[in-house]
Length: 335
Ligand code: GDP
Image 1 (cartoon, protein in one colour):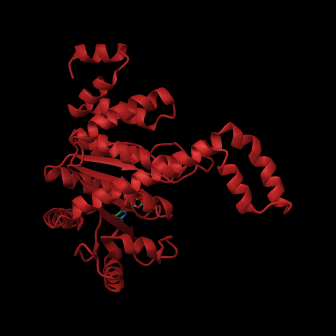
Image 2 (cartoon, helix red, strand yellow):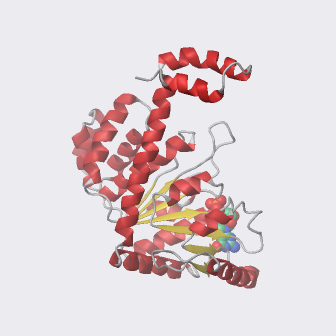
Image 3 (cartoon, protein in one colour):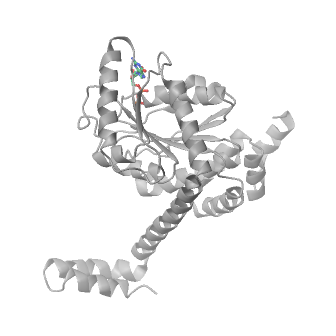
């Protein structure tokens, strides 16, 4: 970046076309600013963000989207750093995003500070975005999806979306990615790791982490057990058989294998047309999700509803009116 652009940028208020040009030009600082707009709650920012996303959408989609989940401490950050570097080695540009289900009220982020991925962060082929702190998952997930589209428009062709094993956030990540990688520890038990059967069923690959030192045998055993468990699930309509592998982010063992497996998946699913169909279905899903959220928000912010809801709630509590009837009355207040 020349000194001139730097000075101009500091002084200017950017227009939507500045953001679009910056993002499409692969300028990481403009990409970061555009994502900040997307994450902003302010209506004037949202209006610009909408325009920027609409423009960038046309140039998005050319990446492999990988969702990664696992319990806290399983080694997600360490793995993502090693995996990201191996993707770069293979000529990819890597963006790392996160959906952090930690509520604003609790102790802070479970996913922690992404500056831990120091080596990856230093690469000019990588873009690491700390998770948005917008609180409720329902609000954070669509923003991560839009951030992903912007990263793709900026030329990042491997997107990693990280989340933590607590349920809702996995479903959100699964519904915006192509490949779902579940990281597990050997010998800790599914229950202890908070991994529900439903999450295992979504996995395209289960990787047993920290397969190094004295842990290698235990990891191999766990890998075999998971391989067996995966075989019991109904076959995938896309023809992919979910695998289980071991890896160590410390020694690097197994990391390239995982990368290459994902490349195979990308190739197969592109060739059989499944990737395109899945993304179509995902886009439709996000339309519905957005509609539902928007309708709820309009409903609860309506003045008429705000005035009537407490009265009707009281009447429902005392049994004067049925919840069904009260709901109907409230819904009738909307134009
Ligand atoms: P996260 O909470 O899932 O993001 O986990 P971290 O990446 O922060 O790792 C948790 C701990 O496990 C850290 O102390 C890491 O150094 C350690 N760790 C991560 N990956 C490996 C690995 O491959 N082998 C070993 N032995 N330790 C690891």
